[in-house]
Length: 361
Picture 1: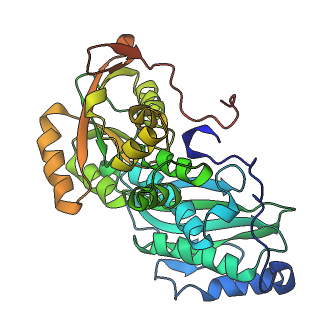
Picture 2 (picture 1 turned 180 degrees about the vertical axis):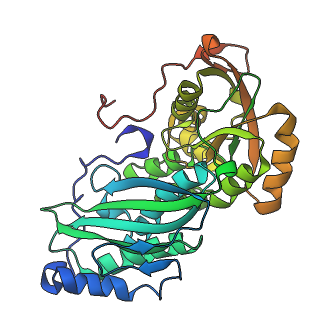
């Protein structure tokens, strides 16, 4: 098991269940592409040329900024094939990119998907994978417009590039926080880490509702696209990013970018109920999972102190996802501090978030 929700390749059977049905090697590359193209409806008018040509040709709205992000899911690093349904994997691959778009206040438009896969993978697995991506993207009006397929000797790799747009006056970056700003976060934290615990080990609890919620939080995170766009429209959010590497890790990114520090009130951190129950059943600290677990894909943002109430009202108007005030931005020299209910403080400035090339715990 690895930090920040990534799944280690050490478990037996991580190469997936026995193959059933037509394999992609039997369908061939171009047959597979036709099967993928048939899954999607006619593209919208802003897609001049989509799947099937050498490049996608897209029509950008005049005056908007083009946003681009990419992220991948690698078997044995981010997921274990026998632990996740293909449709859920597709949703997850899309959601982590949608979350990046949400963190900039962007409007997702088009996705390009590169797929590396073993030749014995069933075609119907690939179709379900793309259906899942279509589900997640389609919720926000985004569309798969192209990509690439290639053989991998033994692993599945799903690499998604997502393009979107933002009005220049509604773009939010991670480097705008100022001392005095209020630190806020959407939703709850630690649920994905709890889900990973249920997937990879036995939890001494018979509460199926807790298990189901936790596993769902890990396998199929929900990007806060509507919330991100609403926050951008307020004009009161000065910096924002999504919580993919853990709250403290991503807070460190935000502080480094803005050359500021932060104080987090531990008692105010919104710990997911399924995280509390799972961590306690395992004899672990739920707050630690909420602060460091990662892959919750909530939005962490710094708000002009005069705009906090406006931001809260705005979010209530577009979503039932709660938001919490968890601290404040301070000067860079004060570093990043976590204040616990007993008054003790811990320096968290060294929290750097998940590092794919760093040492493993």
